[in-house]
Amino acid sequence: MSSARTAKLYDVFYHDKYGSVKLRIIGNVLVSQFEGPCGVRLAKNFKRDVIEFVSVLEHQPWAYMSISNGFEAATADALTILTESFMACGSRGCRAEAYVMRSPIARHQVNAMRSKAGLEINDAVFFPDYRSARRHLNSALATSTIPQA
Picture 1 (cartoon, helix red, strand yellow):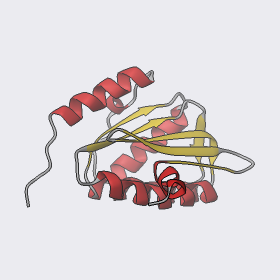
Picture 2 (cartoon, rainbow, N blue to C red):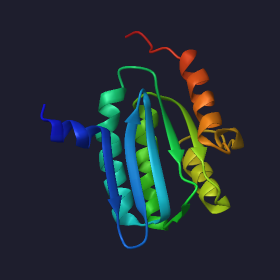
Picture 3 (cartoon, rainbow, N blue to C red):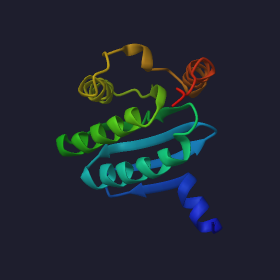
């Protein structure tokens, strides 16, 4: 595998004139960082790369974290695409999730995606900072195992 391919696989960044999204793997955690509003273009890029990144993680216990204090909200069309990404993570072994975000609208949208995926609306997935979110994920992953086929 070339180094350019490896770099793309573990760290990507997209932006448009409104917002941006960064996605990377840190250990066994898929980490995103959204800034500004999220439109369809950003959401499509995010979804495509989430699916690719998850293929690296899905054979071990893994988790998702969004560190997005600068995230404002997603458009309705983008929210549909982000929900599809969320459901892909759930169906491919995501064991826990944590969100660091200030926007009440963004938090509401996360809970709406969780509800569409059949998960309970739970404010316990929101954290004030990276450290507390990471502690939560580490604890959840420490007690998680991969089911035997």
